[in-house]
Image 1 (spheres, rainbow, N blue to C red):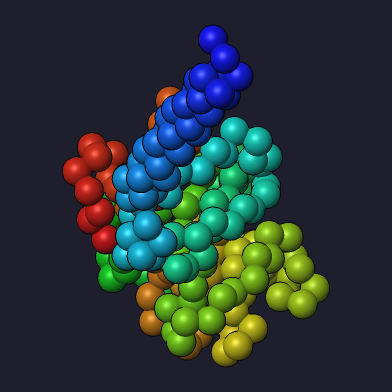
Image 2 (cartoon, one colour):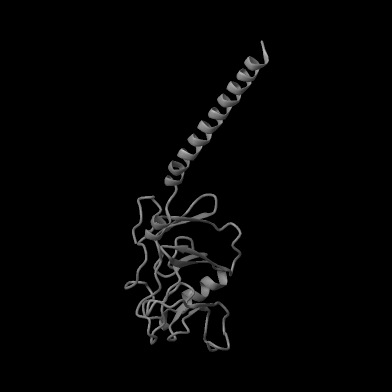
Length: 202
């Protein structure tokens, strides 16, 4: 084989390899939009796509915040002491049995949860949509000696207990909202679906 033929073979091999590589890159590039399209879009999340949260490291007495439908959702791991305080302050509340408030029918009306120690609640005051602060300390000097812990909205003074139930005599008209949710076996929380996975029921 002379030098021209040899160079021709080499050039042919190079062109073939380049074409194959370009085709492969093109196939990958074409596939990316399809893979991305299978993921929930930001718009879908904003409209209510479920959010899954790992709560395995959430310690008793602590609060974590996640976003669902563009709103803050509070996840509070209540202690046994907190639960006892909730059960004792019914006389001070506007709607102690949550008869006029928004929550799924499968949560306990007093503790407002599926699992007693775990409160899942939209962190927005039902008065004008402000975000209350978490004030868990019993007898907090700023809240008064009778304070058993809960949530306080500094905008207009609304108070809620550790189950998100509103106190009587404050501007907020109802208890704070409990979204649809369920717990998985691996200590994950799914917000935005009911326990039977039948979809959003808020």
